[in-house]
Length: 173
Image (cartoon, rainbow, N blue to C red; front, top):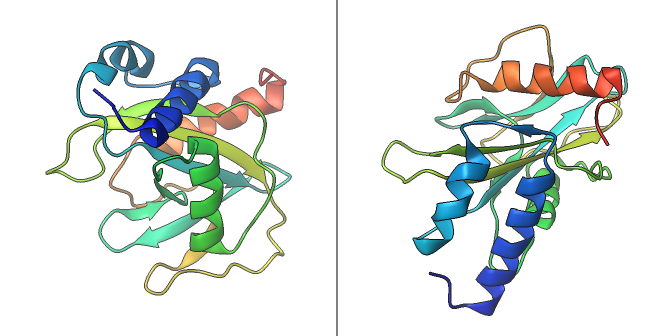
């Protein structure tokens, strides 16, 4: 149960974005219906930054998760969209406009010892010629989408590719 108004504001924004996400994984919307009755820490958000040709993605080399999209914990009072944009800027130096509709909603654990939580993915288009400014110890890089990447979340490359298909067909509203 959430009693802090800032945390409630973050949760309300997460629920709204989860309902409108283009793709759903891990039965996230069903999980979300029962989740507010218990602890929901941390909310997580990431950005799938794609090049204009939809052939490359920005990834961060996390110290133990491998290659992952830029993202992290949503801070109290911050919407998941704001958290995703902040994490993207901190981890890559990029500040592109996030696409209006969230790309995906999922439920996952970000560490083997942590509970499962809601994760929202947003998308943005950026020029690969823009320099990437990474955080210390977590290099940022562009990777081709037709290549797999070593990650703690092995389903992520296929999930991003599925989303890119919706972009190419115009199925994203």
